[in-house]
Length: 249
Image 1 (tube, rainbow, N blue to C red):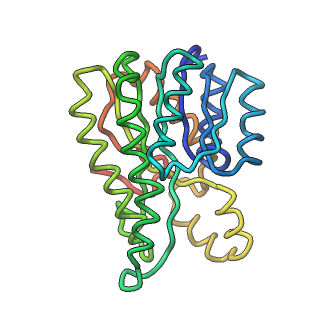
Image 2 (spheres, one colour):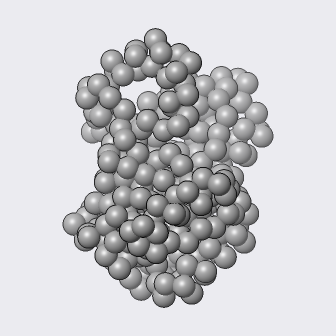
């Protein structure tokens, strides 16, 4: 119960990596607010959370800043505080650089970068009180410059940049800000594996540990560590949870 009594918000947590993080934290005793646009999957995640602790569900479009403030306010009103903020939600479209449109940039930044900014700003007064933890998300797409990922990579590297800035600014107040750069077997990746098994096998060969991460057991457990007191002296870092695919220097 490393997070017993803690209160957290996890965006994009109806499925995939966000769900894995929400469940991993709930099993360690944290009250978790699930924030997503998929009500059916969100209800399923909330039901599992409630088997271990007490959660909340928000079906909100977090590209709208006013919805972000409402979530933070409601969580604090219910649980009295906020200890953990996980900015996981992100939507993007793939295209070669010369074919990447303004609409593609807007989608990626409005669903990933700006909600991360707005949640951090809205949560700051509460995180300051609890000396809380922020976990944002980077990607190998930005670190390695993955082809066809222009808008996604740009938004993820922008998130990395502001996370380092905020780690410096909020560090004196005891708030930790870190990033996870994951590779995981999400539902979307499973669909791709089934449709393109040869490409999937090639990708696996490029991962030293020869497997994709599990959203809960691998990514979720890393998030639990970063949200716990065990990580109190870690901030401004990008943690590669990718089976050894990228080795930062």
